[in-house]
Length: 476
Image (cartoon, rainbow, N blue to C red; front, top):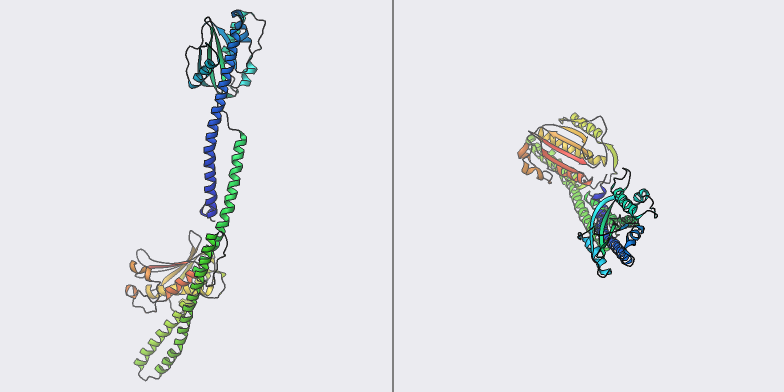
């Protein structure tokens, strides 16, 4: 099964989605930072305005009523109190500096100090639920005790199931006059999660962009896949091959150029094959005439030498004709059992005195091919093993990639490594390296052409410590 990430469509979709995710992540980080900063500034400004308004209000009432008025102010996130000395004597923290500066700007002749710290605190709902109702009829003495109880309660550890939030606590002291200070305990909101709508919108955008990239890449990938299929068909020996001309202009130009090349190559191959067929066919007539005249020679030794030469010429002609036909057969491809072909072929060769045997598994080795051509290739490998190695064994199996393999191994002297790549060249023989056997040197060339026409390959290698191996590998 093809890995989707190894295809053009898969990689374009992956790259597009990754690019969109990265861009959204950067934009989301910037948005979150700016949003958080804006919310913090708004909260700080709100606290500064409320504290400044309260301080200005308390300045206009008698000193005796300031504490009562300050503690009676019901604010959701700020607690006020009035004291003779400030609870905060110095300004610390960036947020505290901004709050103190904002209060000084809103009040004339004011002196403000502010300190801020980030803490994990119970949510507001728990604090409101746990806070006891205030009694406005309590005396002044009781108000101080009540304020202290509220502060102690705020410092108590909440129940284990209480939700905790990250908040900024601000302690603020503002001078009302020479003998009074307004103290405030404010609670600013901490970092807030991004709105769900932003996340949903980003997810929808990623899906839409991914689908769009898949459609666009498919418009490019399908013509390229068709072009690759046509190239494989041309490489397997088919002559009438055309690639569909579709897709973007660049791909259409490539398909048009490939079709022109395939047409020219097909004409050239057909001319070469026809010339070789005609030459091989026309040679049969003079060879037959020479054979008839050789039969009339009275000298037995001379007649046999001439007949041997004629037989060699006939073999060369037949093999040349077979090479021309290899890969250009009109035979239909069918599913056959290569193991059964191996057993039948080795049995026939053994009856003819060829030292070759088959070792196949119990399971059939099914492969779609042209049976006559594959049988010819297997015969060539078997005859080579018997001729150059003194005999061999034909194995059939599937490799790790699921391909069908027909391997013929012998225990002969092998071939020098520098000659391995030349063995499939027409008319090349490595007799001096293996034996004095004769031959036209076309057997492996024919086998190579048959393997190429089936989209397979021929692997030739020496065995260790001795011997030679020829593998005909066919696609699954």
